[in-house]
Figure 1 (tube, one colour):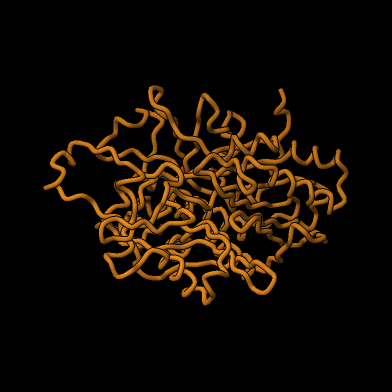
Figure 2 (cartoon, rainbow, N blue to C red):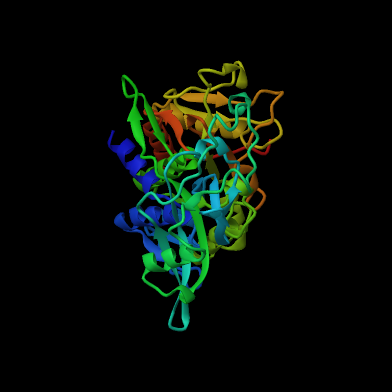
Length: 432
């Protein structure tokens, strides 16, 4: 239960991708990790622990085993710290009748109906002028601030027969019933940050679901929270990396941004960020270019992103055999079209690691007549080619504003990934 409480605190505080990285950074510093800057010289040493924030919303952390120069192997777990929701447009105030609404647009594949009729807030980052500098400041209103109201059933008798929502009409949050004027949103931001309105030069702001995380059920079998996809994996993989101790490897943790919109940004898995960081680590440790490529060939990445559990009311939505359940262990994900990167080698290796950790394993594949999602594993492989397995934890209502998972699976994932970071993994003859 201690880890569940920590997980739910993490999901509650990670109100934007920028706050996800801030929370991860705090955990790392508590464990003695030294911050690095991309723009400054690195001086890495065997036995050292380091982390790097990239453009405010992505993070890399790594430990260098004291004998890493001899083995030159990389163990890496990667997750993402963004989640579906709504981004606020730069000039958001929209007057309609007596109301002020905020102009937003969906971010990622949002389950729209799940965002209605619940208290929401606003969080993200703001660029503020201080003297001659522009300074990034995190913003999070710790109060109910806006709401997206539904249309009463009396005015839409067909609502229970299915409704197609218009993002520009139906999904705009209500900001004021008449007490505010156009421009008051920006004034509210300035007031919260303690700056002048004309000192605000940029904003990356999002709507935040204010519903508190919970542990529930007659036997307390379930956890529910906003953003379990993918903060549950971001949290468990980070905890495992902090618990791991491998003298012969470089252990790496990555938390990317923008997975929900394709990863094709400077802080996403499709960027050169991963390749650049690994190359810079190798060079700083005195590896030759030949050494670096040999290290990559012997390395292994675990791409961590949650998986669909069998729905209790709609079991027909999942494959009859390759399906997963809450509290039944870590999920290894397969896809014939390689939306997931798992193959026989990576599946066998990680299954063996789970066996050693005493962690049950489940297998997931989509129904062959239904399109599935994708994740960051196959995208990062386009930049750094290494053995990769796609895994996750089973959950219900993925991409809803309030998602559900099993209470046991968080501990299963931490145990499996800790074993992954600890083990002496040698992959040979994989080219045959």
